[in-house]
Image (cartoon, rainbow, N blue to C red; front, side, top):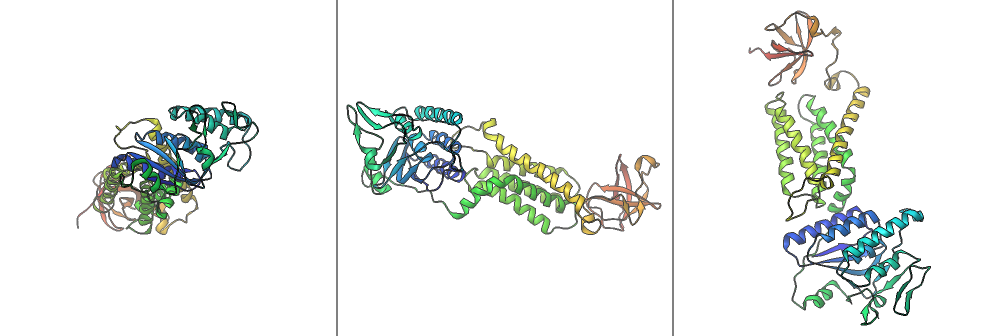
Length: 432
């Protein structure tokens, strides 16, 4: 499995790596080759990529396809072998801030110490490699083998392909490289012999890259989608709000799916949730059971789709796997509630928008408070607003908030009171 890493080390490259490793595990690949051309990137993301590589049990190869700078060099250090294109360069891995400024000395010492330990733990079978990478990270570290000083104090180590293949020590061993090859195919020939291998290359499409960036905006997209769906629930018919909300929620879900962070099971649960919501909207409005269950299935599938689950590993309900997906979904819900409350304050009253919330008066008539009225059980009245399933009715010239348990009713429909609560009457439509 050949996985291209051809940009700055950041979340998109992490997603590409994870997807490629999962496909390699699914297909039973024996070797993974990182086709690397990167100037560097985020140290935090590099750590995640190092841990992802450690989960692949086959052989891990880096092919420095001209450039493995900074974070790329650190990532290459935890693979089993580092091979080079003829013009390949690796090194200059000192920690700096994303703005290009120097990191405070204390923080740099902590990161260098941790990264060095991580490299040693993941590459302990390659003698001397940790010291070579340390010389790329720490300008004050002197790299010396025997009596020969390879990198003096005061500068960072950067190696060409030829320099990485130069042999030192007793017995002589290459400093860092395992071979120089003109292409990935030539590299595989050297490992397995001509014709002794088959290869799958991970292809990164523009749509996948867009989907990877969408993951960073998932809480906001979820919030907007939920607000639109709520507006659709509270207004009659089905129109632009329902379509827009459904599209935004689908965009969040399938954005993560395309980035390689979910399997087919979450998609089935999401689809089931959509079906239950449709049942609530069109077939049995007002029952709430189907709507609540559908909403829970959709939110649960979103969490599932964002979780980093690996093939052939038992499902573990740990905070490390589900914490950030749950936080993202919760943030989306909170944003949706906040946005909707803000909309209620700025939207005009009456008309289509007035149906979003039951107003305290209709056509100037006050709404009676239930606690101040005698028992209305069994009395007949008329709907003065659409009941969808909630609205207002009129009995003997007084108006009350009311709700149908099943179905909907248009304005002017005759209704009968079948029950009541602290805030609204429960009614049914009187058959004509």
